[in-house]
Length: 132
Image 1: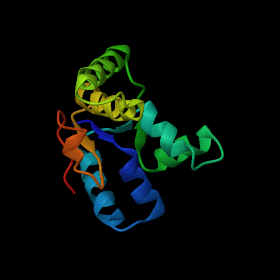
Image 2 (image 1 turned 180 degrees about the vertical axis):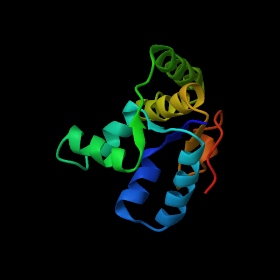
Image 3 (image 1 turned 135 degrees about the vertical axis):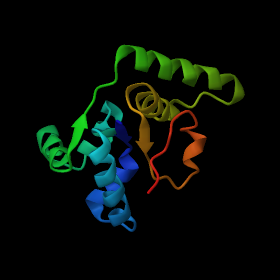
């Protein structure tokens, strides 16, 4: 079972914020069931905390997390879902990353590890969430 990881979880673990040990244990269990991956959006957000992308990749490797680029069909599905929501609200381009992360977790993984102050179901309604 492939587990996609959101930036929110990576930052909780990297910064040792509250709940980091619960997330570490949940990801350790998930890793025993299959690969842990991040998409390009998550990697981009996470890597800004490092001096180079190589250092960020090394840190992910120490956590046994692999970089998994978004495939063309996944990108297309994400943008299609984004466009479907436009008639119901003003165009909000800042929401596109949520659609990309969701599509990656839905189409290239089996579940998503996300920790959000908002209800994660708001943006990730089509994917199974990893409990922690």
